[in-house]
Image 1 (cartoon, rainbow, N blue to C red):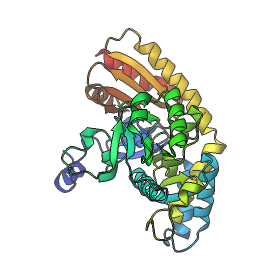
Image 2 (image 1 turned 90 degrees about the horizontal axis):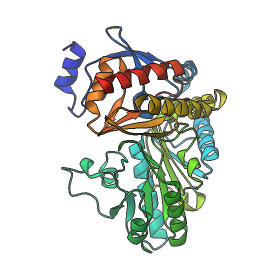
Image 3 (image 1 turned 180 degrees about the horizontal axis):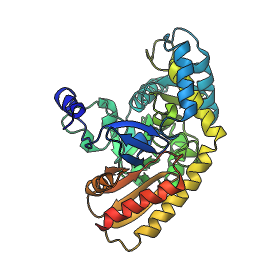
Length: 389
């Protein structure tokens, strides 16, 4: 064990099941460890590095803003923040934006907003989430998530309940006039790239309209071009009331956001919510650079085209392999479902210099969108080889 791993093992909370490598640098869809080994990265920092590692325009934006201004607090205006919230509002079709630092913080802000909005509308009922979801690791967000993340943390906050994913009848029976909000992911990345049915989502939107319930969508993993649309909800023909985002927004620099309709956002007033670091000029400058690159370099179109290429290639190459039950996805968010735990396969891929991720019995694939087709072919070849071994 090298010194880096020894120090981590001695001093860091032991909450990560790390792979035995020390990463030194990255570029595009490739990374190198401290021994000089080269890897193809099809995990992308768990859907963070949409623009790849060390995109030159991101590096330059970091340099420029670091020389100018890093942090001042939200008592003052800054140009990068105002530009960034305008971009997010325009892209989502929602009126107002609150900036924070992570997906978990974004979800917490969504819940506070929902509660405050509910009080203003005489509602004191539950917030409903959908089964097998994942919304972060705070006490409130694990209460929204699947039970494995709740174990050992009781008593959990009250005022939450869950309904089965893709089951409208059950959801319809779960709501009442006191229900405040429905919170869910359109594609459940942490549970194996489970995709919501379009009809289910549209019926949910109509139900929320009928019962005056907020529809809150967690786009922390699916947003910012990952699925071949800027936001995944664009695939489903609906407009949410509130959206949570993070991960790829800052190309590796921590930033999160919630976007909401004016009539919902106005429930919060001075002092109701805030953040020290959220929306710093540094993070927002990098966020602005990220969104500019997405537009200038056709990143959304790349996600759509490369996602279709990779999905079809995976389906073709895994045909006849007994362990493979399903290959599914939208854009460059793909899951390969197996009839066995996926971790041993992912570990074997690691030995063959391809980085991926196991979520139960599903291999989760969320590579940098800038990945080349040649790199896709190489990664798929390794995956198939490891399935056959």
